Image 1 (cartoon, rainbow, N blue to C red):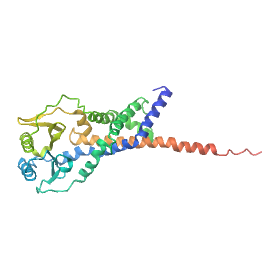
Image 2 (cartoon, helix red, strand yellow; image 1 turned 60 degrees about the vertical axis):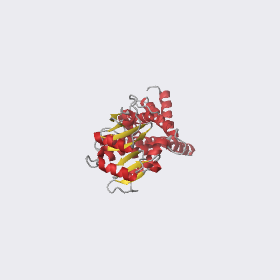
Image 3 (spheres, rainbow, N blue to C red; image 1 turned 90 degrees about the vertical axis):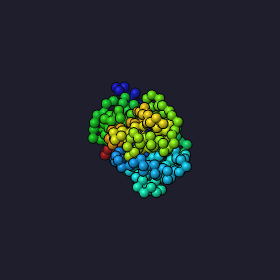
Image 4 (spheres, rainbow, N blue to C red; image 1 turned 90 degrees about the horizontal axis):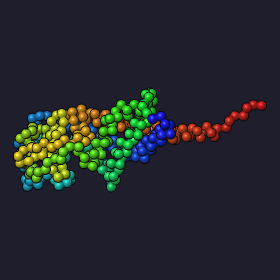
Length: 312
């Protein structure tokens, strides 16, 4: 952009969006970095043939004899399975090796349980800050596009600009897909519906078509019962029915935003993007603080300095 006034206005908007929303943006980015590791951990932990249908059935029957559980989540890295009740607090965690109830948890699972609510809902009744901050992130990057091509210099400002331009398409897609998820826009055909099966039956239907070792979860998601399968290269969702598994249309925003593509590499890409966002946020705030406070203080010192009188 060649108009100096317009460029100055865009630069001011770009800075103040970041400054005003610095705290929620920092929460989104840091928790996003923690959650980005999930596909890496999951893909690395899954070992085909390590889990059988008989083992799953035995643990479910033993710990849910009344068939009240609404789903299962298998944490392959921790070697545990959680039987889900009507809420998260009702979950029963089972050690897959011993079949006993356990409280053991992989270190990452603890971090994940802490990060996900913050990433999706922020704190208290401030859920509205999540889409607002996400939209502001997109707007800030679009504004940056109209501020001219970067000139690389080995300075903080130079690295800030080059990082933003080099990863621009992926950086914009990350918050944009997050917004689509917030408003439940899947960019695909409507998914079929079917009455949920009893948990044991849903597990058996899923295990008929897929190695039980690749099951990530079978649970209610909104109005549907879903089975998530890790195929090694991606995670795919299915609808368990009495006739068998029905593939669900891919939720493209969710697949990209959560890194559920290219196996481990989807998670690696999201980790890189999260680190890039941290660099952009920290460097942007530092550049603003340096120009706002340090230069102003220097001008005040220079203005207040006594000009030496020439000797007569």
